[in-house]
Every structure is written in C-alpha cells, then in structure tokens.
Length: 103
Ligand SMILES: [Zn+2]
Image (cartoon, rainbow, N blue to C red; front, side):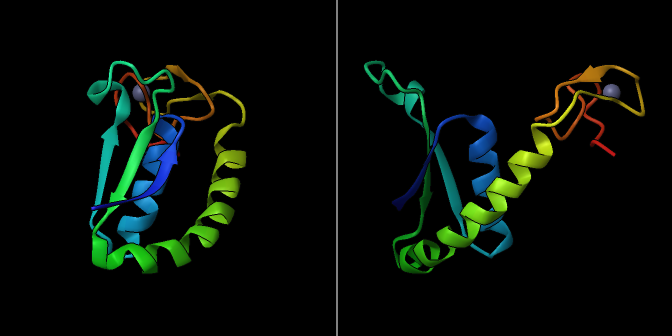
C-alpha cells in the first residue's frame, strides 16, 4: 500500500475514501494518532494499492475540486434531522443521534 493523501481530520478522510472507492480503488485509512503516540498532528493517512498509485495520483487534482465543493456545501448551517428533529452541525452528512442521512 502507498500513501496517497493525508487528511487533517476524520471528515476529510471520509471524503477521500468515498471518492476513491467510487472510482473503484481499494482504500485503506490509517489513523496516525493511534499508531504513533509522538505524532502531534493527528492525521488520517489514505493508502491505495501500489499498482493503483499512479492512477490515484492523477485523480487527486480532480478530488481537490470535488472536496472544495463538498466542504463548501457541508460547512454550511446547522440542520435539523427529519427523523428525530435533533440539530446537527453543518459538516455532518447524517444525524449524530439516529444516523438518518441528511435530506
Ligand atoms: Zn436524527
């Protein structure tokens, strides 16, 4: 496996993982915080297969665009769950309480 991307937090890691998985890649996410206690920056490392690395790299520029749009969309206002009516922060795609996807 080769490191293709380092995400700063869980949400970004999920974006990267989803993006590459939709493109048919096998993706592994490694949390540096749990493997290295001396790591100050707790990032999430995204890994792809060695043979997929070059193809993944080419897609990265495309991903940056997708990520920008998603972040802008998701970092919006708080939203209310349609199922349980709990309030959720803008960056979450599903309800923290009942897991219902954001509608
Ligand atoms: Zn809910």
